[in-house]
Length: 231
Image 1: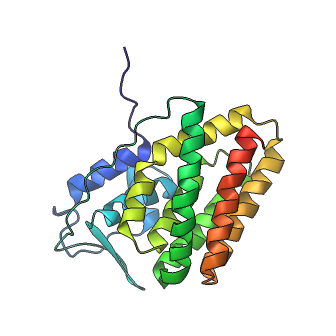
Image 2: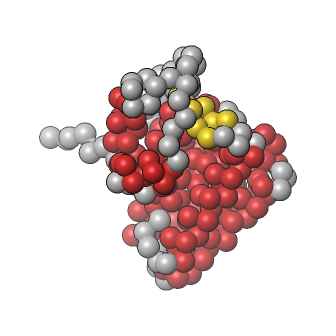
């Protein structure tokens, strides 16, 4: 008998924050504590926290104000209905998933380069640095990897990109784990590739180069397909 997968840490933080928004803890119009404080409060890493915050921004429950922080919205946008893609059931599913991401995220990265505001770009740079530090130390970096891509979605300024990336988080975890399990590439070399490819994406977005950002994202995701399936 199949059972539903256990909720991820980001799902748990998202659910807890959802309960608290609009209460005395985080009333409407209030500024949320900083990421470090929230991460300590929920006993999670900052990349995990950012995934939960990204979902809440996509749903219109939170808003980022340039140079000020993140606030509980007083009048929320209509929440987007949950998107359900279902689990990846077989190897062709995994390839189709990566090809789908390539198309969506290339456009997303280009939009981030065109539209990213200062606060979103700072979060993107932080996500890049977190991923680089995790891989440099040889630590598992799945959540930091997902956090980077969600930071790109946020920088796009398009809540539909954010919602799609949040909905794809579990499939992304699965595909990353599968790639690692099947890869013959030494960890140090694989981590160096991760740093290089994500660094190029971030560099292009931060420079406002939409064409280069889209191309760097496409190269990164097509590289994932090649690493998993070969030519």
